[in-house]
Image (cartoon, rainbow, N blue to C red; front, side, top):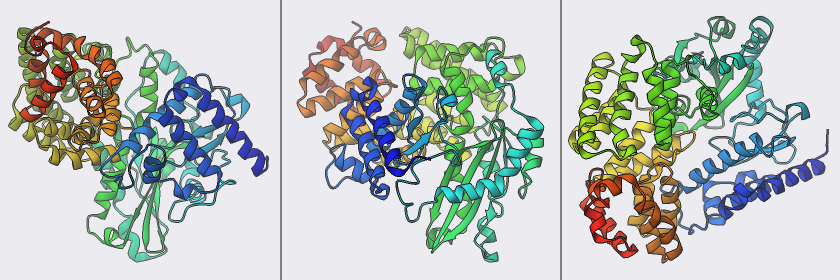
Amino acid sequence: MPDAATRTHEVEQALQRLLEWPEIARSPQLAGFLDYIVRRTLAGDPQSIKAYSIAVDVLGRPPDFDPQADPIVRVQARRLRALLEQFYRGPGAGETVRIALPVGRYVPEFVEVEPSDADSPPPENRDPEARQIVGALAPPRRGHVTVSWFVLAVIALGAAVLAYALSTWGPRQEQSARAAGLMPQPAVTVVEFQNLTGAADDLRHAAGLAIELVTDLEQFETMTVRYGGSGDINAAVAGGADFVLSGIVRREGDTLQYSAILTDVVRAGTVWNKAIALGPDEAGRGEVLDGVSDALSRVLGSPRGPVHAGARRLLLEGGAIAGGENLYLCRMLFDLYRESESYAMAERANACFAALGARERASGQALAATASLTAEFAANAGASVASQADRFRIAGELLRQALVAAPLSGFVWEQLARLEEARGAPEAAIAAYASALQLNPASTDAMAAQARFLAFIGRLDDAIPLAATAIDAAPDTPPWYLGVPTLAALREGQYAAAIEYAEIYADADRELGPVLAIMAAQGLGDGDAVNRHLPRVLETPTFRAYGVLNQLRRRIGDEALLERVRDALLAAGVPPQSLLRPF
């Protein structure tokens, strides 16, 4: 095994190759972010890698930066994580020493990959038992669950899964399933967390958590969830589980620590883990299990969570699913559409739902998703006003049927809220969003959608904490979550932050994103940025079809914001007639 100096050198070389890769080199902030966290870790100082230090030392934020109010570090970490995965899938596929940024952390991990496996990227959330070299370079942080604890948990709770899966079940033929376009809804078995505190009084902190998790995860409707009892993991595997969720509860000083582990039965390895530390006051609350379950479900239930990584990979890589469509894959396509607002992805999702059998097409999920696609095609395709009104009418009827089929579906209520928002019915939208979150309070997508809506109707102060919670909890923050931080930064005159957010937000909101970027650029006095974004505004199909302000008024109920938009676009050189008439 190489000594620490050799390992450090290998990581530094891996870092240099990443910094020279054009996709990272063209963004000084992302390059600086990566360089900073790697060198701090190599220096044996990972405990200093915090959102605050990254924001101030790398991203140029002022000393009064508040990580809770400004999510820029989480956003840039998401972008960096995606680029690292892209590098190791492409030009870095042959790298044997890789730099990974686990979801939810800013401390990188350095992974050794066997040469025979170097053409396969490391999983999004790497198995803690995988060979690492970070442990020899830096001491563990106080209050952090170290790799050894996770190894203990894996050995104690996961060994039976690995042995049983390898010896009895064997790997599934995923490649043939992918080739056929078949990928069923994943099945997750949740077993009770093991109490390792050594105190009988602490049993209440573990017993019943699995039931809470089953209840919460079922609300997402994108996985089959089963209660696995007190930890008979062999039975979970025999019952057909794709994943087993288990964990431990232990004490570290006066802190109660929950460590959750998600095991992929097919690949016989841990694909995700998360630690939640609670102080004495938090641990003493009666609803402690509900809070822990909610925090874990926000990640595991998310369409961007580890349970759905395989389906997303299949769909993003253009896997053919014709003839193998099912409700799960259609829902994953719809969620990918939601993240990008891409017309092409909307068409793929629409075609998938149309190809389903009659029973699945009549489900609440399919009807609600089809309703949203129907209503939103008008905006994406630049349809006529009459056509848009027809689409809204059809979408409303589909959602009425969806509510009959699934009246307790948070997903259905969220789509209804979005339709009411598009139809200019704010009170109805508020009520529908409230129902969506009451039914599924762990849905960060519903939370972020409600926050953006509130911001658009002038309730920015109400929107900011909702958006911050969604951004903080989501496993990967989609660009459309950043509408609220953009508006908040503009209001506070933080134009540098506003343009960072707006340029990312524009990836998902091709109407308002470039407009907000122009407003921020004007605040900075950056004429080049104004000129860069102005053509995007003038080329937007819906703006050309209806006039810029006419179209934005369909979405924005805040007259003060519309006035600022008008002034900014006039100052940028948009002809006055283009604001109110087709052009």
